[in-house]
Image (cartoon, rainbow, N blue to C red; front, side):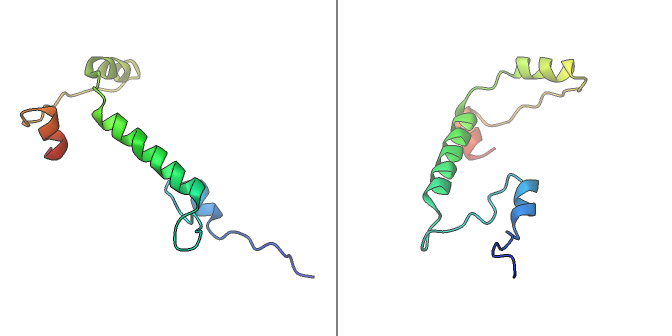
Length: 86
């Protein structure tokens, strides 16, 4: 008697990366739970991009962990321009 369960060939890859691999499908689209997870991740990324960065705190934390830091500045006139044309 053969094993009725087919192993997922993507399982090893999915465990090795946070990339969205072999998500499955529902008809022509992604499953609802994956669509919702993607929307949540996208919203979190947008919030992170638009949040102010506390450079002093980041630099202090990196130095505390033994990292050297170098500060660089964009030549963009303001944050909105930087986000459109870094």
